[in-house]
Length: 385
Image (cartoon, rainbow, N blue to C red; front, top):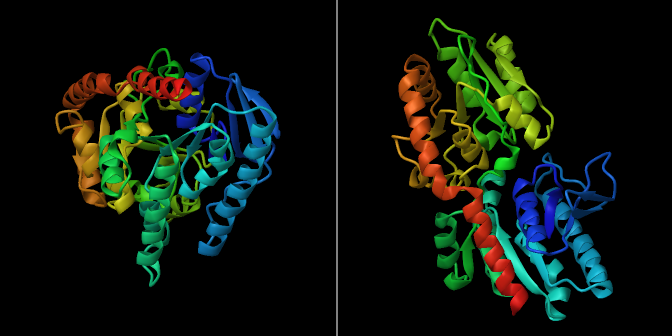
């Protein structure tokens, strides 16, 4: 497997799929980036992590962004080619972004390996969310779509995270029959064995994951100011990202910093879920960008699996998978609507609990055992060819 990012930090999809491959009898190498303090080589849960001396940065401009992706792709290509020549791989599984990371699989492909292209996000949407409008935007996005089609054409199998992405990839020219949906659901082995009750304590609003502007975390600060219920609200944000300081500054400026607990750093996945367990509500505050229209966050599945009531921005892909009877939706990007939803859940916990129960039943069809079986089928078919 090849991923532009650290491993296993921040890459639960890669870790879940690697575990499936091991269970199916494969030996698995993951070629990844290296965070400060991590060893270059390490065995993690049976996976051989090979970390290249490059790390991901979120504070780069466009030129730096491209340079980082290109430098990592070249390094990964050389690493994979050398390892393949010493001991050939049966399957090379490339995780996007960037889509041109598929070039790291070309030498193994030419020498007989089968290739999987795993689309976590559509690159044109990611570019638009990060760099916004500009004179070159349409040209860059057209180029990214061509690279996406090339990557899909190189691959023997294409994976993606939900049905809307599958439709979009097919519409962009990737052969529909080559695309399999493997959803980003929960490795339930990581879930806490029990969830502490929120009881009569504070009303705990939680979010965990990357803290970046497009995910709308500043809406929580604006909504917190509008809450007038005579009850303590606390806001717990677990994760790291380029919006951490902005959130802290906004909360401090508005005089509500005592309500916010922001980790601002990475925590192991299992540890985060232990902290989130028993929360009064989990929030998906994504802003209404093109990227977020297609977002179906794994944290949403984690809240649902732990029977935590969910408040979510009303965005098409989430709406396609859950209904008003299962989640409490608010108008995406609207802090007043988010505050109203928080008040609604706090004042009517029985209705919130009923929605959480219904969401848990709906989640049965999205569970990782269902998704992992699909991935195992793809691996088995490629290995047998």
